[in-house]
Image 1 (cartoon, rainbow, N blue to C red):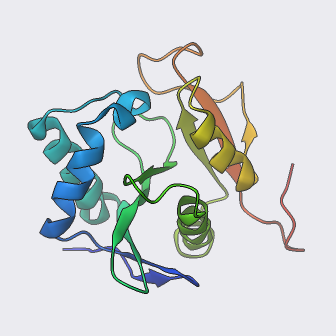
Image 2 (cartoon, rainbow, N blue to C red; image 1 turned 180 degrees about the horizontal axis):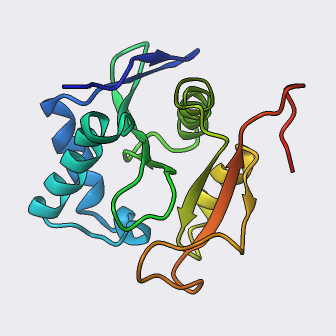
Length: 179
């Protein structure tokens, strides 16, 4: 079984999920906070979502990490590089648990996951699928340097009214972001 590699940042640890992560992540998925992700989710759908993103490590060599605050081990959310069957490209996405907003945790964790994708996966670009109106997620994508890609293919069954595609590019050889 392949598991997520552990990645550390200045304030966070990205690690493979453990069973104790399910309850706080389900609390997000079953709430109105999941509105822009197709939720709120039932217990069953939360389980299937989290299990798929965790199991993707074995199937695809990438998936989701639990994100915990290093200072106290608090689970602050999840970040992942996933490509379910209905996605045309691998996506980097994120979810923040209630009470951890406004600290830059998602941006910090996603930046670390992107660096891993560029160096370990050899990816040259990833996308973030953002629901129109989800200004917080769009702001994270933009802080990470992503640009709207109107020409990108959409997940199966989705339209531009459902999804905005933000494209993340790997840094070029001089360390800058390609346009």
